[in-house]
Length: 252
Image (cartoon, rainbow, N blue to C red):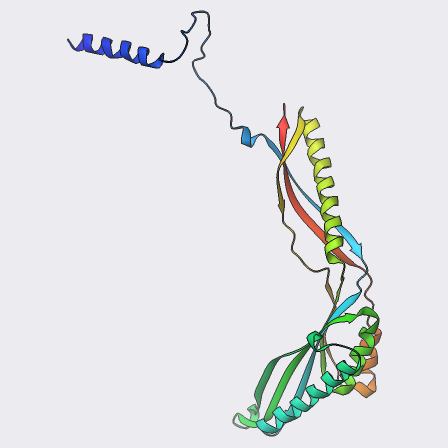
């Protein structure tokens, strides 16, 4: 009885499998194993990085005003006056309020560690960030700021106001470079490139900048510190880089 039930089930299964389909011809060769290929993986993937050189036309300067006094209140007053002098000079040089930012108001005691950790005075630092400086005015801005009371030039950063245009140009070059790479790989592999199926932008938006100088302490402005800082302004060129990943479909 069990054998009959099994035979009937097998026949039923065959009938169900054939529902809605044409009868299979006895001449059709049905393989024992069928392999399904994931066409999404039939791609050539390449990376490309290209750069465009550009002459910077603006700069950002970070200055520090440091003062030391015997008591905290006097130190704050002295520092505020020095910062005001620097800001006034910057405005006289044609910079707008929106281009001048003060930050990092650090007031700290000065200790005499050799005599029982006694407080001998106070030191205060205020940072002044000056942005959107025309490149031809950087040297003059540095000199005037130091003469007005800035003690340290933290950094001078050169930038390009045409960064977006330069970056788009670098992106186009990177796409062209990626195609050349992928096409060479396809030819070597005996196939041809199809459509682009993926492009990833992997660039870091740097704003086309680099630090020309940093942490330049001005010991004595009258001894040439300011003039030395001004003469160091040589922007040269900056690089605008584009880094991408591209995947192409493969035609076999």
